[in-house]
Amino acid sequence: MPRNVIFVGVDELRGELMNLFGETGGQSAMMHLRLAIAEVRHKDGYFPTMRNYMPREQREIIELVLATSRVRQIAVAELKHGNATLALAYNDYINSMLSSRHEHKSHAHDYVGRFPGESRGSGTPPLQWLADLIEVLKAHLIPIPEHLTPATA
Image 1: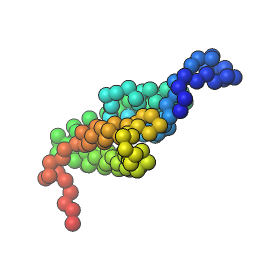
Image 2: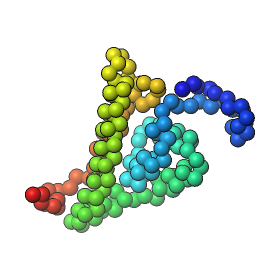
Image 3: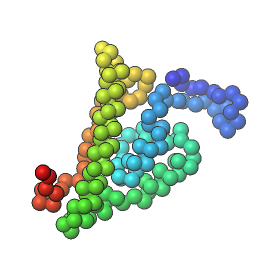
């Protein structure tokens, strides 16, 4: 994807240079919203930067959820009172995102990582960064004492 592009005839951009990313996955509001609900914060500035490419309404919803979601905190508080129901549901939610992240990493490896010396493809995200995203999600799983987990057959 070219960098420093000027879009002629797009009045709202006022002729300013646009530094665009090549990928589109980080621009999907759905993953941002799911992360915000789960109180998952990444240390780098990638996700806030990608939100700049979203429609204003989507950014506003995500920012509101980022500022107000307490889902994980409530699940942890309930767990301290011996109720694991919310923590189990929260972990299922995190595991569903982990599944998506693993699939994304697998596809990136198949289409980018198989080429010697290549880890970036058309730009961001590098394969190691995808692995780091998985680790961030894993770190948000709530440890649940075995005596509070349902018995499985």
